[in-house]
Image (tube, rainbow, N blue to C red; front, side, top):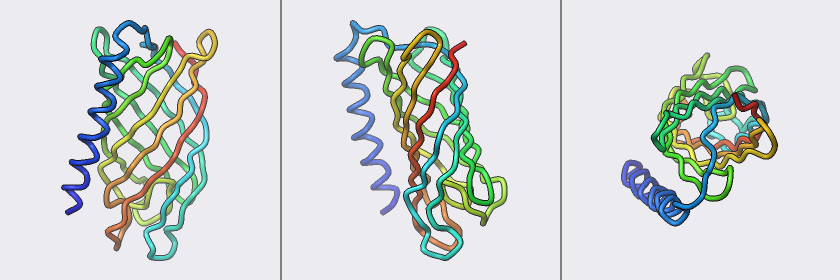
Amino acid sequence: MKLTKLAASALAVASIVLSAGIASAQTAGTNGNYIGAGVAVGATSGGQGNDEAQIGGNIQGRYAVPNTPVSLRGSVLYGGDAAAIMPIVTYDAPIARNTNVYFGGGYSFVTDEGQKTPLGNQNAPVVTLGIESEVSNNVIAYGDTKWGIDAYKNSDADAVSFQAGLGYRF
């Protein structure tokens, strides 16, 4: 059942992102690489005690693969008693001048499984949907949502976390 929900959600989001890319073929988007930092707000709990929602920080980076709409991203969500480290691959679609939406997936590695992070307390697959925009010369503002699938120990609960921050484009 969870796989069916995941597949349906992924198809719905992918169609929106791909439609945005087609509709905005005339826009430039942003293809810059950056590293940034900001806040991370966990919105869920696994319901098992010692796994309540966490507020913390994030460090995120993007490497835009040249001549493709694909980016390699890294994210660290910290707060609570551990950190979630995520390599992620995304599809990036320009929606306005210097602005992209992105959708992708990866995996969350929790530094100390069983301990709290803004995105659950165990290793898990992750889906992300976000937006990034170059707001001034070499400054990127970003925000995204991460969905950790079955991201809590001793629970079938999924985890959701919201991130926002500013990055330095290089």
